[in-house]
Amino acid sequence: MGHVDLWVWIISLAVIIGFFFFDFYSHVKHAHVPSIKESGLWTLFYIVLSVLFMVGIGLFWNWNEAGDFIAGYTTEKALSVDNLFVFLLIMTGFKVPKIAQQKALLIGIAMALVFRTIFIIAGAWVLNELSWVFYIFGAWLLFMAIRQFVDSFDDSDPEMPKWVSKISKFIPSSENYNGDKWTIVENGKKLFTPLVLVVIALGFTDILFALDSIPAIFGITQEPYLVFMANALALLGLRQMYFLLDALLSRLVFLDLGIAFILGFIGVKLVFHAMHVNEVPWINGGEPILWAPEIPTWFSLVFIFGVLAIATIASLIYSRPDGPADKKAAAEDAENGKDAENGELEAGSDAGDNASSDADSDAEAAAPADRKENGLSNGKR
Image 1 (cartoon, helix red, strand yellow):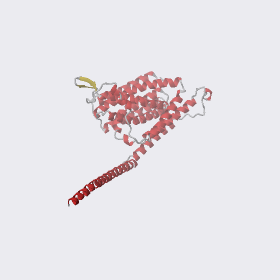
Image 2: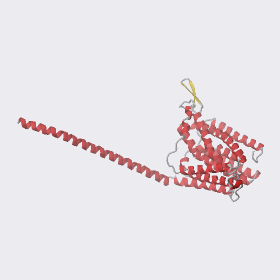
Image 3: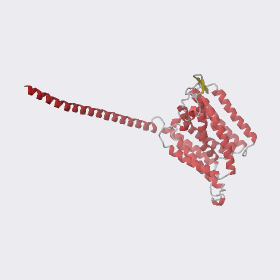
Image 4: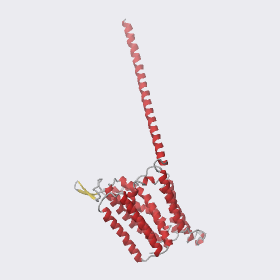
């Protein structure tokens, strides 16, 4: 496949599968809630592993391919962190116990890797046979970049995808969990626990995420092996990163905006590459457009790392204690409190007016009776 020997593919697949089994038996089989320290160390381990893999590519292949790998891996990692927001929504929506979240994440991620591998093989074949597909990938990423840019300014709370809540209609399940087990017995009947629904939701949600992540990494490198390894290594550490960033996700307020710029950059890069290898008859007579630049790997690396660094630093500054985010939230709370106070005052004023009006009405109703009573008294006298 591509420029990589079959034995290299076999060894790489065996190592990735081995890590998944190791992950399952050492961390998930003995269910526990991972600590920040544990999650941090394993996240660091997988990042160091990816850096060592990059060095290996540089030493045994060439450093240009190594640069493509680390650029693709970084892009996939950034997109994965952004996707953790949706994972968190699904976990919260299904009220998954902390002790069961590890198993749900690992199985969901394994499903995602299988489906992504299929997408990568299909994408590599299509791009090799039909070069004009680069135009479609580029246009799609530009569209996704614009949508991400617009959505990044939406301050409303994100909602769980509606299709996720509809899964339960097709799979009979209980509303109760049984630790991290898949089934539970209720009223003598064996049912699936909501954990099954969560795993399916996580797996298929990640497939939807692949619609932008796979074209994005093909915009950096068209080597199937590098595309697969970048995806596999980015997904491997995703479970640990979920628990590590659980408390920090709400602070990465500008990550969406940064990813929008990265997707836009890769979209432009894909369009330039499509022009450079153009074979479409009605574009430049089917001849390559030689003035179209090929963006070098070093520039892609600088741009991707630079955007992520700026987005992260800006997010941490904005969301720090007593920072702009806190001041904005305090101002909104004060405004809401003021509105509530005004509402109470208006309600009190209305109540006073109504009481005064009722008293006046009672007085007016009593006046004729008094006059009538006085008249009768005078008549008797």
